[in-house]
Length: 257
Image (cartoon, rainbow, N blue to C red; front, side, top):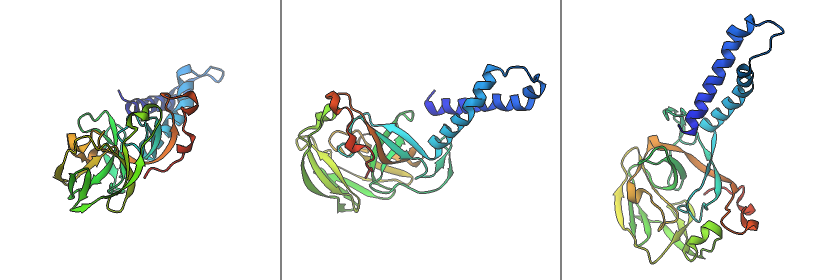
């Protein structure tokens, strides 16, 4: 079972025990009798577990970045916060949408359940929304025939687990009004393509364009697989480098664009 399922079950069981005690067992218990240990634990933990469940399911959820596919925007070791209501409220575990609140826009960094294995969460950037014609030619994106213009920003140089991309070219990309940095490795194949995004689907790519397994490989993300919009880095921890560099303090609190 995954963590959301465990959290829902823990909330249900602890709430059931506490409720049964208040309604059935407590009135029959002698005044001096000690409260059963299971009831004591349920009474103590139920409110906490319920609050965690509600916050995690409907407000904000933390995630850790395990790979470099979104470099240089997100680094290996970043811990991020994801807005769970940006694209509508969904029930935990069932993932059924119960309230429409918004839709992904081009340029959003989104967390979603990987279509080939929905038990795994991925994070990529939306580059094509329903109806868009997306093309990738000579490492340049074209959205509905308009190029996402790029400006060179030097060469990437990182530490620890992120040093694997040292030497890649940093480019500042204007994704039809949404600006962010990407990484390009000139000597890697371009993987040129053209694609029209179907209704209810989203085309996503990693900012590390030549080192990301994304919609170019496995297709689009169904709307039902959306988890939320990444909006902030709340911690950075990379133990692959020198001890003094395990935490990059300057990234803490950064907004995700």
